[in-house]
Amino acid sequence: MNAIVTSAGSSEYRMWPASVRTFISAMPQCLQDDSVPGISLGQTAPRRWQNIAKFREAFNLGLDCAGAMVSDDALDPPDPKIWNYALDAVRNFAGYVPTPLVTPLQLGGVSVEWHAYGIDLEIWFRSGAPPFVLIDDVRDAFPTFQGRDSHLSHAYTALKHLADRSG
Amino acid sequence: MPPSNIDIPGQRITDPAEIVIRRHRRDKRQPIVYDQRTRCYRLPTTAFEPRLPENRPNATRHDKYLSVNIASSLRTSGLPSDWGCDHAHFLAGKVSVEAVQAANLTVTWEPIESGDPTNPHHGAINGVVELYYRDQDEYVTVLSSLARASTVLPECLPEN
Image 1 (cartoon, helix red, strand yellow):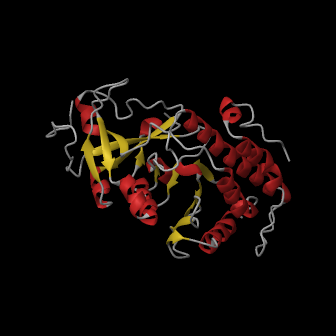
Image 2 (spheres, chains in turn green, cyan):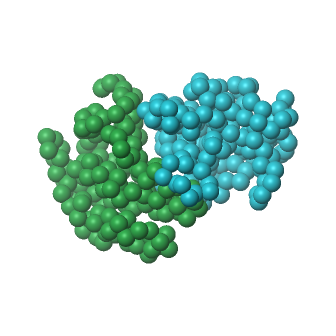
Image 3 (cartoon, helix red, strand yellow):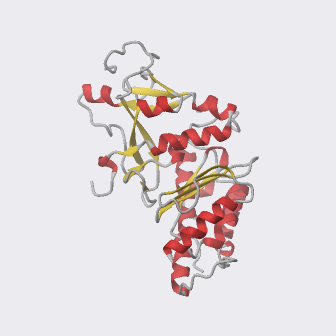
């Protein structure tokens, strides 16, 4: 695994609490296990590694964007507990699905979303409540969903379809 | 220059054909959302989140409403739709007042007449902050509906 360097050198990064910097530093270890229980896609290992690298970069870009917004007083600082939870919740799909768009939310939260292969999936992670999930499949292979998804069962179904379609 | 038929700050804009422009901070390396139903680039849902006062007791800058620019006001003044949008750091997208009204929100003309910079074309989408405190699930759903109704201005797309 390559070390993450994207945020580490920025002035925003140095101003953030140690807990956020620890979270960023821990990300490579979080993404080393890329197995997805229950699906076997037969992808080659190099492709999975490439997907994982892009996945990690997406989270770093989200943090970079958050850093700039915090500097502009346009955003609350990212909450490492929420970002860690989000990363942990979707990391097993990192090798199998397209790169997500990761954008910061107010109150320290994070949105992880995919818009590809006919599937629109957004997962909003915020403290104090289960993730809010928005799912829309243009191909109508599975139902539209908007609501709290305590165990992310709806989100995982969409991610498995996304993995199948992009495989 | 106010929008047509509007001359009092705070006055509601009811013309459903009126367009408002919302800016969204992004890192240029991040992808732009491509709406697979409308086949247009659009703003992400997070672009419509206001700065909420919660958790920011010492913050002086939180939002009472979503800031936008009023397209007809820009046009009347001979300014482009993406006026004030630094393309290196921001996307700008347009949404019709009709879509805002469909989400049970309102648009008002709120010119910024003092401070630096002033903005006579400034408007507000009202009701989002109140909605967050009333029903957080409905809040996300409404923001999503605004995002899905939005279209990124062509000037902001990479080929321009």
